[in-house]
Amino acid sequence: MSTMVVHPIRAAAASSGQAVQPGMCKSGPIVLGKSVLIGMRAVRVPGVVLEEEVIVAAGSVATKSSPPFAVVGGNPATVIMGAQENWARYKEQADTFEAQWRHSDF
Image (tube, rainbow, N blue to C red; front, side, top):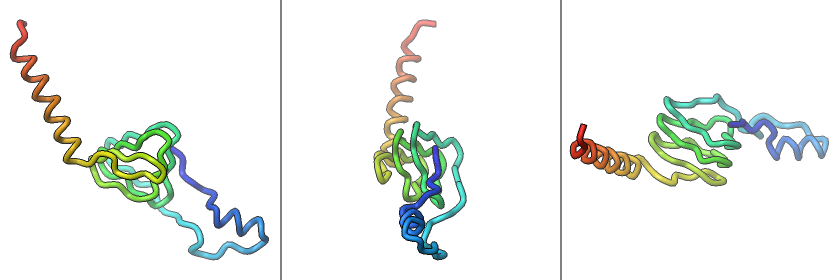
């Protein structure tokens, strides 16, 4: 996952010979929660916080912080699947696995 260093405002100011003023470009720390999965060629804008158990789709541009246990994707990245949908899918898979396990002959 890359972090954007060159901002369009900075590039425009540099090409026109103007000085870049404080506050023109966004900056911030890189904050990743526990078990964050980041797809290939995804970009995170500085200052964005990716909370616990977040999945960032490949090629996405994360411009805003995301809630925990969410799947985000797109340009700009939006929540594709939230925590409730994720939990429902997990619970369904766990119940199916448990039912198959109980009916198997070991």
